Length: 323
Image (cartoon, rainbow, N blue to C red; front, side, top):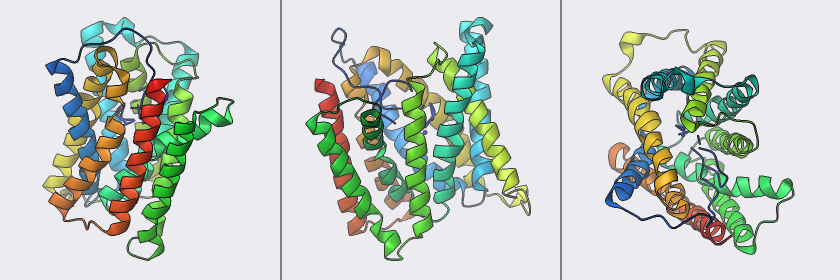
């Protein structure tokens, strides 16, 4: 998923992007049909990546598949940048490269990789709803560094954390593996720190270039983690299902390239308050697709906790819009 936060800086994807700082600065932007089309891509495609991940890990090892996804997407993005903008667009300073690598490590193996690992044991819809709490962590990080969040943001954080508590009930009751739930919670923290840091480090000025380096660095790290975990042992490529291969290709081409390109364009063409709504639409899409395609159960903790988390995110986003 770079990846959701309430601060500026882009399914990770920059692939995993962040929720931008939702301020009212700048001239009003006209909402055209192209804007709604791009927003629809971000809503549906990013919401569907949780389903894609769940299908990938049916027959593929988690970190190796995640690493391969982001290395492939990152190299494709490098090629697209060099083709469309020229090789000079890829030039960065050492500090900028170091910052992009650090953020990539936090977002991809730390954030996305742990989610992929978790989805080997928990439903995709639950993972998406747990991840929706990221904007609340970002508000907490901002408060820890001296910023004073408004009353609405604080209320949104409390709602988000309450929803997070409800969403952990299936793990505590034994309905799903608590280890998977905890992995996603750790992933949200890693993702939040990476998203928060990306707006405070000397990142490459071109967001596409930054995304490409983040994906390649994070993807290589994911591959190394997979090798250290021994995921290559017993791996039979011929035993990988066709639908897992198709899901991986979908994540590379649509989740990591198409949706991020649409997102990056939206940041320049649409009001940020509108763009940020993907943070609470994606989980709804993910839950719906998980139930429709994989017959994932819609339990009361999932529905109640999800509604509370989404409500908290809505409150945070609406508060940021007025600041």
